[in-house]
Image 1 (tube, rainbow, N blue to C red):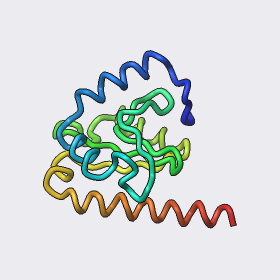
Image 2 (spheres, helix red, strand yellow):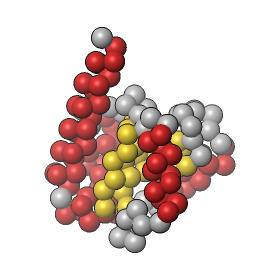
Image 3 (cartoon, rainbow, N blue to C red):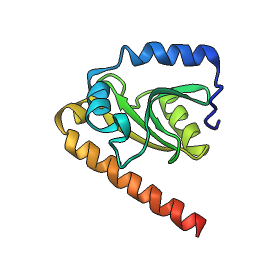
Length: 129
């Protein structure tokens, strides 16, 4: 379930469609913090296929996934929990925020993402030393 640039072609087309229909919080986080390497110089991809699923934001260098959940999607279903568990089991770090958090506390969300990136950078540095 690793990042594959040749991921399922239908999934890639579906991801493109989803990018044009993003929720408000997702669009805000993208333009405010993640687009064009604004977040600590790292490239994030929006609505990107990872394995057999599409994630809201993905940074390949850090194996970091960021998910923005709408009001009715707060990790309630068993399938959401399984999806998150599977992604984490394959080595992806997952951050999950509600749309409300992004819309009303964007600075806290950005701070959390930045701190997570710094922690991941330290872990990578320690593994290569």
